[in-house]
Length: 238
Image 1: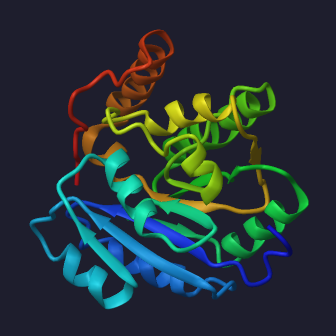
Image 2: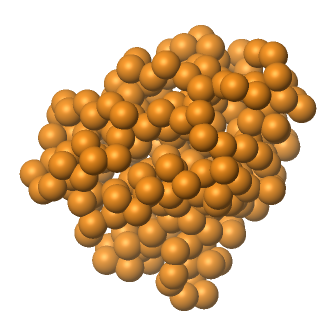
């Protein structure tokens, strides 16, 4: 892909009723040290002011009732960049996240790059869950040849995204786990410890830490054996 010095990066943010969090996320993307960025918000027909916030800060706003996998794919179809960054609407990147990720792409032949995720606020439980579930386990599995990354924040070459057919839209959850297993056949995944994303722990706080830890385990085990989502609809806690 050349030097990537002028590579356009498309940041895709799926949303549904995220008016409380979205502006901070989009302003964070605009404040990245790397500036050749377009922001695409893929909204699932929010009933609050999400789309209004999106139109103030994004380059492209798409509205269609979908699950999160289809929303990400829809954003990717509108993307003009050679690198796609998927970012959750309640999450923020370190200022050098995109710049560092592009340098990492330059140094490696990786198709997907991700880094650790840390909590925005929360207590020691939040720190532990993020360290285990969004750092240590994904890092170890990826090194062992079974890539595991989180859709909270990840970057992928658009060519690789198209090669594997994007996210599997039949997945209402674990779509990122599914992509990790599928990319093994035609691409490489790398962990960049030098970049960090900070995400809201609202789901754990409002839905219960025990519920979400159990949910993760059930989803992961179910996927390993069935290659399907364990739930027909993703629960929302705000």
